[in-house]
Amino acid sequence: MTLDEIPPWRLFRVSEAMELLSMSRSVIYEQLRSGRLRSVHQGRARLIPASAIAAYVQLLTDETGDRYERSA
Image (cartoon, rainbow, N blue to C red; front, side):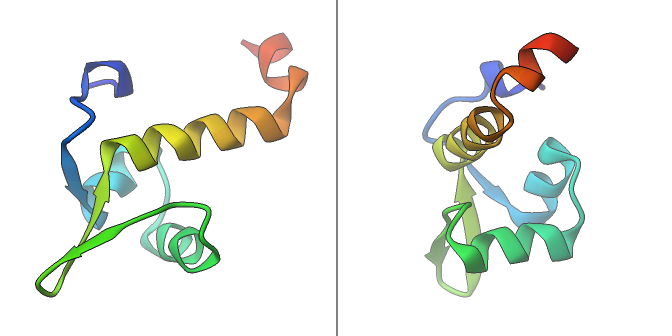
């Protein structure tokens, strides 16, 4: 499943976000702590909205600027 195919209301567990973003658990939690990646809580579960993942990918793309466009 690609990010384009994900409904914006879908919520992902941290393990699913790890797979989607190809990042380790510690990096995901570091990004959550820093506020760069948003999450919500449902009971004790931390869930990451699809819209937050898309916004995080856009943030990374914006930070790399045109270096990303040239390497694609």
